[in-house]
Image (cartoon, rainbow, N blue to C red; front, side):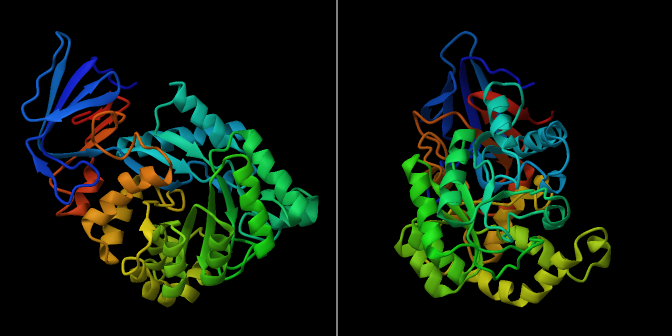
Length: 409
């Protein structure tokens, strides 16, 4: 259970980075009252008898982290009982929160909308975990990225996935996602590396189908995220009016320029790709993993390596997304140093996980340390604007004004 904080708390770290500034500030304290930041300044003191001062020497205090691309449910267990799938997600939520991710956008699994129930359980205090915004499932064409068990469909007529082809089915499916409790709609504009039915270079829907899908979501007031890796899939999704493109790791400068021109966010998920590309020659790593997944990454590895740095050279607005679930969730912080390796400055990487991520998610109370913001705050030993590796050592987490992790714990 979280350690309940008193009504009036002052946080004092050596450095403070507010989510936007060019550099951290020294000696700036933060006052938290009833779950919100109410004041920043020098040498603040609690104002109430039950107030407390939390000192974090040698640390940088920064806004709670936001991961805009997470899968808390393991879609390899799609054919298991829903209760089992949900129970397996409980430690995942705890892990993400302990590592400083106080908010996540969960972009769904292939079949049941279980993340909606997990979100409710977190909101009601039944589970510790990040604040969740969810796309219940990934909408996919038959034979597309979200068609997860084609052999079951062929043999037993058992479909695993949220599948829709053509205008009527797409409209019906988007509306069903809204009814299930979606905050976002996600669809497979293109193929994926892990797909059993397609390849990463496939395009999932026609331009007309994508246009209809985005329009149907807009009718329900829902933003849309498009899974897409290649130029044509990304360009169709952007022309349709999506709010974010997920991955785009095989796109060229012209497509990135179009994303920037249309003011669409990109969530690049570079570490998730590096996780596999960097281990292609490690036979032990691939024991028990899909041979087709290895073959797909091997086919495109050189092209991926060439394209990774293009995002940093572009004008695209980037929001942080790890694609945790494709790799262990405790490694979701590794997107920070991976972005830096690919040409981002530490400042750009940190903004992607704070103020820029909050902007993508339409959450103005998150991602910044300023009066009126929600009291989601994390601390790391050292200065992350000098060394992003310290983001793997979060040892203080406050969420909604309550201390969720404090070293030692």
